[in-house]
Length: 80
Image (cartoon, rainbow, N blue to C red; front, side):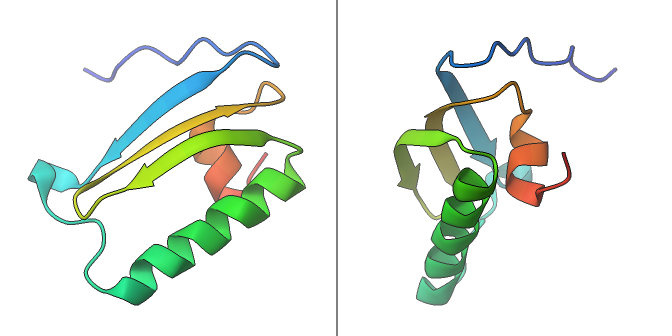
């Protein structure tokens, strides 16, 4: 059973946690961190979203952002 869709309001802060499958690493090398930060910045600029804070750890990512009512997966993938 999948989880319920996230309730999103424009301009309201969203706290998102992205974990690796079975808590396995999301990032395997230093370049992976840089690439993720680049994608995050590009997505924020494209979607006119303000990223308030983020933490990149080897097996998960924490992100707090606010902007238009765009789901986080669409935000990062750029498929709005």
